[in-house]
Each structure stands twice: as structure tokens, then as C-alpha cells.
Image (tube, rainbow, N blue to C red):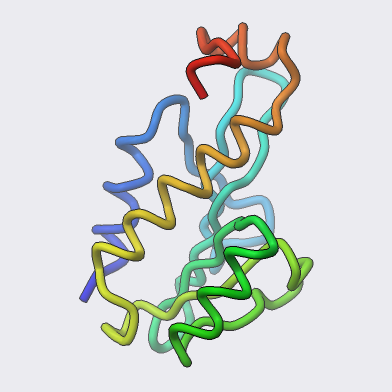
Length: 127
């Protein structure tokens, strides 16, 4: 079962990822971006019991995940069509959660403008 430090380490390993607390000290937000702009790809509720991570997904992938895992739901306070919530209690396998973190990051990077990707040293064909 993934812990909060495990999620932080997984996110820190993703290119151009950084942590912020824009919504207060109980919600850790992971963003990708450069100085002056960034986009969130994961939110981690630090006070949740069990902790839960909210992740951006393509709508059809979110539907698949909600059908496959009873624990996966729409993320609170976010667009339920594009964001899911995954509790870190072992009901969703750790490998799946890690893959979802990377996929959320990649989805957000793909949504950046060409200029923003170039600023990050990425090219559209490589995303």
C-alpha cells in the first residue's frame, strides 16, 4: 500500500514536477510547469483517512477505472469527468496507482502549449 512519502517520491521523479500548497496545508498539489505558469496533475489529501490522491484522466479512462475498482470515484471539488480520486488503502494496486500518476502527468504535459513544452525542453512528438 502506497504511503504519502511514496506518492511524493513518485511525483518528484517525474520531469519538471513540483509540490505546492495553493489550497491550504492539508492538500498537497503536484504541478508540472515552468516559472510563472504550471498545471496541476495530482492532489493529495493529507488529512484524509485513508489518504487519497486525485488524478487527471481522459474521460473514457476514468469510466474504465471506476468500473474496474469500487474504490475509484470522482475527485471531490474537481470536474468528475476529468479527475478521479484513488484512496491509498490497497484496494487499487500500487503499480496501478504509480501508472496513473505518470499518466496524469503525461496528460497534462500533452495539454501544454507548444511554447510551454519547448520551455520544458520537450517536443510534441516525444510526448
